[in-house]
Amino acid sequence: MNAGTLERMAESDETLVSRTVRLQDKAAYGELVRRYERKILMLQQKLTGERALAEDLAQETFLRAWQKLDTFSGSGSFGGWLASLGYNVFRAHWRKHRRQNDEVPLDDLELAAPAADETGSADLDRLLGILPRQDQVIMTLFYAYGLSNTEVGQVLEMPAGTVKA
Image (cartoon, rainbow, N blue to C red; front, side, top):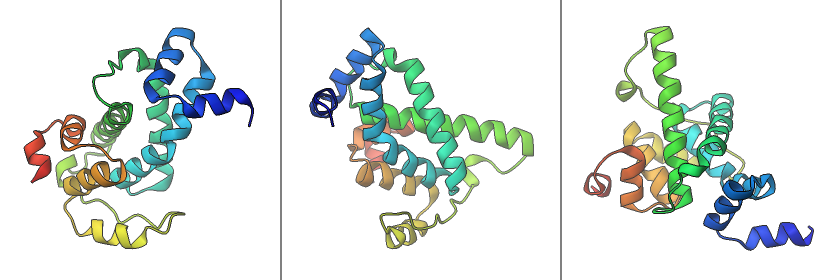
């Protein structure tokens, strides 16, 4: 690693966002992608149950983040903002897909049990699989993503008390 790479790794998310927006610094944005790519992919896998679709939606999430990065206000965590964007990318995909195929509403869809990933999370996936879809997403955002109840509520557009319950 060179000195520039080490410096970017030590910078906060907010500093990297600022550099990306002000200077169109692609290396700074690349560091943000590196920090969050696994989490966004994991979130999309929990939402879709399909690895290939999750990869496409994760890529779409980072593309939209690049386009909308100047809208990140810094009032919450960058991870929370990115998770919210990823959730919205999923919802937009699902609405489009549902209209094309006239399928069941999003709230009625049961989440498929994803295959174990490279971290060996098969047990966690099995345990999450018994929960309703909305609860699976909440648990993933809270425990795997490390978001607070308030941040999870913002991502899913629900009160923090509902998330906590």
